[in-house]
Image (tube, rainbow, N blue to C red; front, top):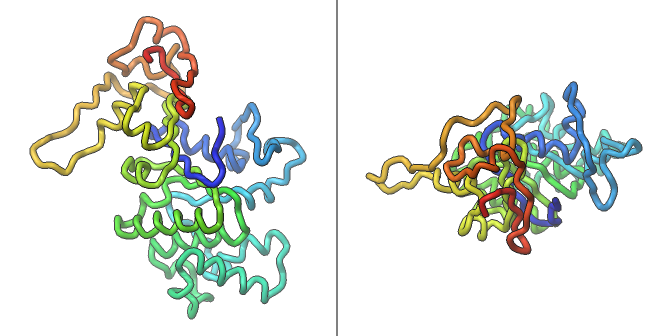
Length: 289
């Protein structure tokens, strides 16, 4: 699969399906997990990031990460922002000050903190802390930002502010985003392409508008039906899913979705579905269509 440069690719799917594990493949965050194993190749500008001679610190400079919950370091606001540049060898105080100001301006935080740069980062509000973490990522000039539900822990009004900020940064700094969200309204609003995951498999991929208009995989169809409507009296949607989600440690044979699929064919229980391209942009794993 290919992640298109300077665009926003969203990963959606049920909790526990592997979205976060997959996201962490792109900057080798899984390296720190005992027993983690990666096979295949991940190419960044044509170079395999899992090659033995790769400088992982440099990789994580190029491929930054913004987590679900703001995670400022137990340091001052200033030291949080310049932490990365210091690791990569920047010692000049004037340069560090310029980096801090530029990064905080990019994150729309400078005017709020310029007079308290040496205060603890924990003194900031939740939304400010998340913007600080964005500034910290930007301070090392990344090419790609990985985002694991970057706004879900924030108030709705702050979510909109962060999402608009991220989109402006992508355009201005020519960044590539790969992000996870359970909020389908957010995905439809900001993503250019969507990848649907289920139990470790990418079951469908398409451009955002096409996927929301014409979902092909039965799981994608059920997922989009699950969105609640604000109209009173309509009740809860009937998403058409059987059984509960299987245990990821004991995967079903054949299509991993077949125990819950009300449209399953006999071969769905025994044969893995082929990966096909129904259109130039769409990818689908399903026996049905």
